[in-house]
Amino acid sequence: MSSDIHAERILILDFGSQYTQLIARRIREAGCYCEIFSCDATDEEIKTFAPRGVVMSGGPETTTEDTHPPVPEAVLALEIPVLGICYGMQAMVQRFGGTVEAGQRREFGHAQIQHLQGHPMLEALGEDATVWMSHGDHVADVPEEFEVLAETESIPVAAIAHREYPWLGLQFHPEVTHTPGGSRLFEWFVRDLCQCHGLWRPQAIIEDATASVRAQVGDSGVVLALSGGVDSSVVAALLGRAIGEQLHCLFVDNGLLRKGEGDQVMETFAALGIPVTRIEAQQRFYAALEGVSDPEDKRRIIGREFIHVFQEEAEKLPDVRFLAQGTIYPDVIESAAAQSGKAHLIKSHHNVGGLPETLHLELVEPLRELFKDEVRQIGRELELPQTLIGRHPFPGPGLGVRILGEVREEYARLARAADHIFIEELRAADLYDQVAQAFVVFLPVRAVGVMGDGRRYDYVVSLRAVETQDFMTARWARLPAEFLDRCARRIINEVDGIARVCYDISGKPPATVEWE
Ligand code: XMP
Figure 1 (cartoon, rainbow, N blue to C red):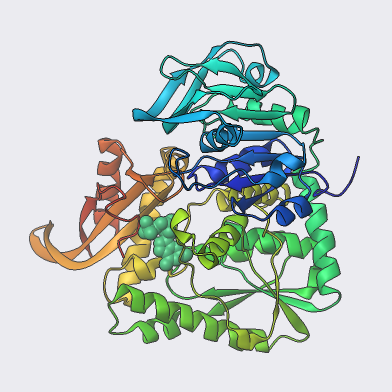
Figure 2: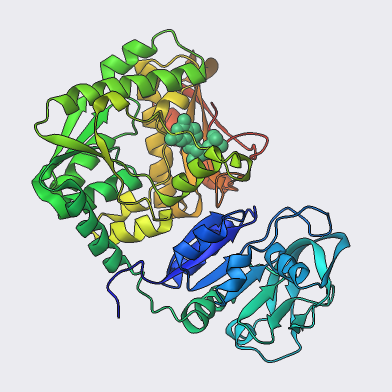
């Protein structure tokens, strides 16, 4: 068996489905490397990638219109397994002269498939015939070369197979968790049909990354901005193992972090034997933010200050030629989409600006091929603590965008104290892992409160907790009233300066997760 984790690969052609990244994750889970290409990839690009199989995603286009993205001929010429999902199947049907019709209305939700033919792909789904549908068009007539494997109550063609080649189509979406047997179907496709052997495993990925980093950097130094978030922490752990003392981690405390965050980062990496330089830059950030209340200005200033501080510190280090970054595969896809003008397909992301080219450093990006859940898995293998791996996302500008309007040191202190109580209570009630993100927002207005015998005017905070898979849409978390009551009491009693606690019940859209 090859030790090259990229030796076996699956190609995903993206026709614009919101589920394309999920397809890639299912294939990775089945133990095979895969990449996402746009559906207009050239025949040359497809052949050069040398996939063992191709998955064609769904998409917003319709084959019932004159112009629609076709199946690239190279996909068929390779004579390898092909799985068309939703639009991917319809495009294949169209290519062979079958017909696709627009439905009366969109079918969206669960359906039961009925098998018309025994086929290992459908057997892989297991006993439960429940699948997830999300389509407007459906296949009405199947070309002669194909046979129909399954139908549902509402559509005559739910699954097809070519009679001669391993080319398959599904109207439903096996990549979403709402199709209970979906992961098994991908496992069958990847392992049995494409004959991939599970080379893509966490330990093998770590070994591969270690070898490539060593080859790339030689005996030069590498500097890393360690934020304490999952991605930069995993990069630090990985590089610490790969290049030991050649790695220099810089942790910048900008005064906008959560309670105890700096100490936690220092302790975690000390335990792993990875030295970290802590830079206390709080006052510098507060000074730069004085009098600034526009959120985008605040973001820019925080980003700019960070770059200045980092640059000053990095220049003090000897022999540094490389800058390590925690770029992950979804970032790579997003920037490719932005460059190709297809950014509308994917959410724009807003990390604090890149480090300037004036640093003259080459990039080391050992997580470039990985999805977030793979990064977490590798972090666990590298013995990073679960509290760090399972942490909710925290925006680059930190409390800077959770303190509405002007940022002041006093506001940061109050926001941090209240946030700590909320998070502590969530953990104590076993609710932390049930929400995707939770935090406190500080409102610089004063409301009346009675403390003892006196009236006081103190600040207001809002608790925010959301449930979401992808952060593009989010639902406010239905936290129990008793729980919210406990949080509010503790915050008002324990944080001197806060008189009221609200709970944010806005969904995204139209609201965003953060308040600024
Ligand atoms: P929104 O507020 O856009 O947030 O619904 C979606 C996700 O993005 C995070 N977020 C940011 N992350 N810099 C970041 O690194 C930012 O400026 C920023 N703004 C929002 C937010 O916390 C949520 O996870």
